[in-house]
Amino acid sequence: MAKLETAFVLGAGLGTRLRPLTADTPKPMLKVKGKPLIEHIFEKLTAAGIKNIIINTHHAPQKYLEYFASPYYGGAKITFVNEPELLDTGGGLKNILPLFCRESGILVYNGDIFWEGDISKFIRHFEESKKSASLILRSEGANKNVAVKNGCVSDMRFEIGARYDKLMQFTGIFACKKEFLDIVKNTPQKKFSTVKSLLEMIKLYENSVEAYEDNSNWTDIGTPSEYEKIK
Image: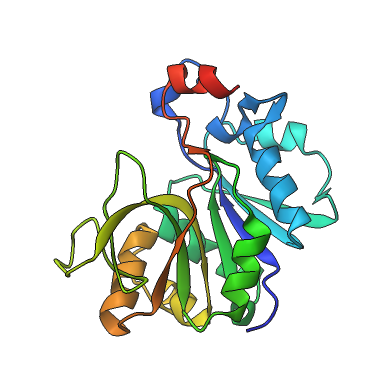
C-alpha cells in the first residue's frame, strides 16, 4: 500500500466520567506530564511520519483552537472538524472521508488515551501487511472483549459469536485501508461505531482484520483518580 500519512484523532467525546475536570475542557486537552494529552499524541504521530492530522471536536471546541493556533504541528497539517451533533467513531470517520485520499488508508487514534507504545513500528508493519485493518490490542485489561483466532480478529463485543483462541482488550488505535473505508463510506447511518464497520468487514472477508499485540503502558484515564496517577 501507499505510505500511511493521515491520522484521525478522536477528540469529540464528552468526558463525562472525569467531570468536573472536563466541565469546560475536552478530555484530550487535560494536561498529562506538563502538556495536553492530545499533544503527546501529535508528537508520536509526527515523529512517525504522519503529515496530515484530522481531529473531530464537539465539547468545548474552542479549547483546541486556542492552544493550537497554528494549522501545523511538527511539520504536519492539523485540521479540526467540529461535530455539532455527535456522530460516534464510525460516523466521525465517515464525516472526514472527503479530507484525505482513501487509497492511502488512515490511522485512527482515540484522543483520550495515554499510550507509550511505538506507533512508528505499528505503522511500518501495517504498510507491509496484506490485511485490510489492524487493531492494536492488549493481552491485559478489564475489558477484554475482542476475540482473536490465528492472529486475526474474529469477533468484537461477542456480536458474531465466533470461536477464538484468546480474548484481548482494544487500545483505541487502529489502521485501515481503502476496502474498510469503503464500508464506512457506504454505511447508510450518519451515527455509528467503527466496531459496526469492523464487524461487517470480518463477516465479509474472513481474516481481514489483524490483531496486533502491544502491551506497552496504556490507560484511558477514565476516572479522576486514574488521571491523578499519571498527570
